[in-house]
Amino acid sequence: MKHYNIAIDGPAGAGKSSLAKALAAQLGAMYVDTGAIYRTVGLYVARQGGDCGKREDVLSKLPDIHITLDHGPDGLQRMYLNGEDVTQAIRENAVSRYASQVSAIPEVRAFLLDIQRGLAAEHNVVMDGRDIGTVVLPEAEVKVFLTASVEQRALRRWKELSAKGESPDLATIQAEITQRDYDDSHRAAAPLRQAQDAVLLDTSALNVEESLAALQAIVKERIGR
Ligand code: DC
Image (cartoon, rainbow, N blue to C red; front, side, top):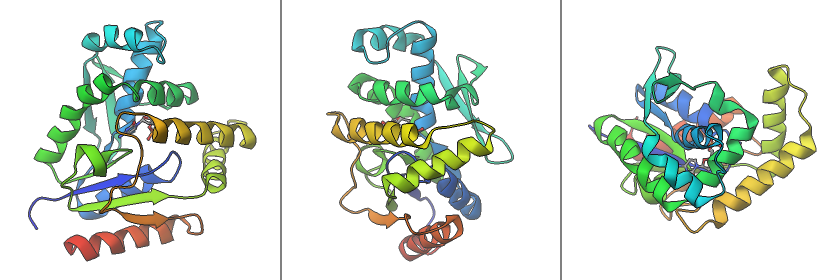
């Protein structure tokens, strides 16, 4: 198969980014983290003093947002907001909520569609998000719906933040993830849901290596790589 795209969707904290990134490296494909693009929009609106939950606030600022991205030799996706490198800034905890809020607005989703489809048309991509298999790349050669129990996802996030030297509260993280799951799957515009032809991969009982092996097996079965 010459050109292929792999769509990986699922709820927050399911391990999409690390697994998709590792899979892309193994395949020699481009890894695209679409959540980072929504985060960049949320960051801009918040920085301008806008309320990410208010449609008018977000839409009035949309024309001023120019987003580009590139990939370093380490495969890290760097995000640029009007030329400024915001790769780190979009990882702030508050930005998760801003991203979820702006992502519920249909015009924001439409605004970002071209960037995502453009990358997939030009490269073999492993793209992760919420609506890649259902809306962005409905023709993707492989679709995986990656999930894990909310308890496991909260625990993983807690470990990640603890390793960074932060002192997170597990119950708060779990509540935030539960809220984001609800918001992302109940919005009218491209809600988070498993595509009909997606393979479900639940990693609750799997470690990272086992999850990656399971993902690679799905891909191999579909596209022989
Ligand atoms: O994957 P992430 O946690 O960085 O994504 C941040 C938010 O962006 C998420 O809560 C929902 C939204 N998002 C989306 O609506 N569609 C995507 N394809 C990716 C992310």
